[in-house]
Image: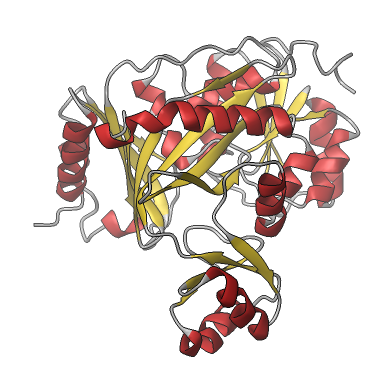
Length: 389
């Protein structure tokens, strides 16, 4: 191990590693470097967003050696390795753990990688989840609907995100096509929840057991992809914050998480919070923390994996974040001047060369007197950037 003990603080000047090379790894790298750390990433893509910022890049296509050798080399360099992407083979994380700290540990990663394991572990621990049943055949779906009722939401147990690997069966007639569209027999059926809102909470825990959560974030989705996040949440949801914090603190302690994770909730029409899923890493809904809070989710991630003191992140101003997908790129390119005229508007681009519909290319964060006003401004600005009437 590179450090004497899991509780030995990893101080600035040390090396930190990241599994994954996307925009979350890029923003983690910026935060860590600002604090004085060096960052290495593991990612096959040569010019990925995180590689443009990191100090070292392991595993790039065309490089020498196999994935296992790249993992071992990065782990031996780094005093801690973390995640920006959960669909990394657990075996590679276990390999890294032979040489250095891996935060979060592989046991939490494996829970979050599989929706059946995740929902089972959460419900057995007494946390509120959407009702579910594991399914592996078309007949299992009919059987699940007898318990869950129609409609049912079918999801692949692994690797689905942004609506991929999901289908809805509203009645028995929909089951054959919905089931075949998944393309995987390792799946889960979940009860359709008529929800009032979708919210998320980002929580950090260090090896000393300190826990800090950001306030609740309110999320709007478009075509299953996060579209807008606001903080503070609307007044009708503010009473749920302490309940969400209690749940997230319970998860952090129950699974002995070291690192940062996000819990996504549905708010049922009854006002009940129900866990939809977890991510063992920073989250798209937390991007607004960079400008809107005294400590960003990425700085808190650094603090957690290095066993530094966690800080209570104070909201500086109400804010909203709007994703910039590839759809924004029109002939002539986006009108960036529309987003750069105000000091309360912050543009983040991820360094991705090819804009495609549905691909997250960047985001806008808007600060305003209220989060509702920030949402309105963010939508208007995004429309102006995309040059749409």
